[in-house]
Length: 290
Length: 301
Image (cartoon, rainbow over all chains, first blue to last red; front, side, top):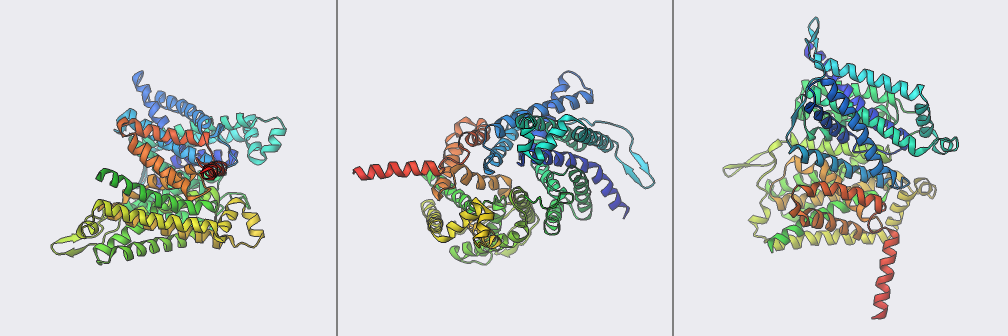
């Protein structure tokens, strides 16, 4: 029994990565009503860019900072190439262009690293915290804290700044927002940069908690991030946070109960349970099923 | 020459995969589960020919039916959501099928070797074509016969009332519903038909490669399946066929001399194509123009 509780604890800590990826998908969906399929791949690519900092210094914070900045730039580039000049009225075109981007980003990473996984430094090294029979891994705690801070910053940004106000206005009523003098293109581009930075953080966290970074990470992160978005409710920020933690915990629990190869089947089944019982997700507003 | 026959076989299977996604996309739904349905068709058809020693055609049809049944069953819960949610739901379902076959063992002894699917190692020794002495050319003919049948069926369906109904749902669900079209029935039948075609594609794939494993049916073929109709355009089946030839024949085989860079170019070209021709290479306007040219040419002759 204690093993299972330990598994859930570890899963909750790792689940913050899924939460961050889920937030990225959900914010872009909220503002543009489009899904950016290349988001998780771009996040992993950003984490790779962070490794370039090792040429100058070996401090973990430098890697972290560079990864976040680089991901912001990648996010902007994705906006330019996949959304800016593609007619958004047809739903298929941006979907396909971001899928193309997903393949392109992955291949660039494979090409530049010769397909070899890279070791990734932990954000924070220290003794594990112990509570009776349970313990919390220190590196996962570091990841968890970073994610909590990022989410707090995100909430402040969305609900306490003019940029957040504009983004929420565009999400609710694009035409009305435009009439009030909000530039759709600016808001969209800013959303891509901010979610890109968030994704970079998630990429760093995934790399730091797994210990190695490989292009193979991007597809599982994409599927898990999308599942989190659906379970939490498309466009809902709190939903993405809660669902990310839930998926992380459930995944680790299934792994402890069964094994690694079967784990993801049960995660997918969890998604189907939600689709049947709560197709709008945990937190989505009623009637917004798109 | 065998190289070109082999290439034609690949093109044929990919065309079937693209056509399976085409039916679904006509109703405005995007399904990323087509590779999963192909996996069901592949495993079922291969187990029937290898373990139960059925003939090829009934085994392929049985594989297609099994995949169609799975598509029908997944249609009901998945179609409670639409649009982008459906993309995610089908992506997850396709992955779940792949992971099921990753964990699927069913081996029986045959002579002194054990045959059948074995989890991560996959399913070896699908030797139907070898054992019955089919040449590469005959296999290719068989594949393209199936492709021609399916494409002709879809072409005919497109011209019939069924095609109009599918397109009506794809263009505007509300309008379609108000003229009395049963949305759920239409979408689930499109999913079932798509699943059947994907199952056929999988069954054929299993027999010409002789070895299948779970990783053959991952997210990449699923993306390819939806990429063909979207890149080619949805005005008729030839858009899909043209896109398959462009992607598999030109981008993948034709650019082989570029080595590693080919994969980079592939993603970049999809992004570029969507920027330049968001409705596909052969959208409705282009098809009209081509038809007019064709008519003028035949009128003169």
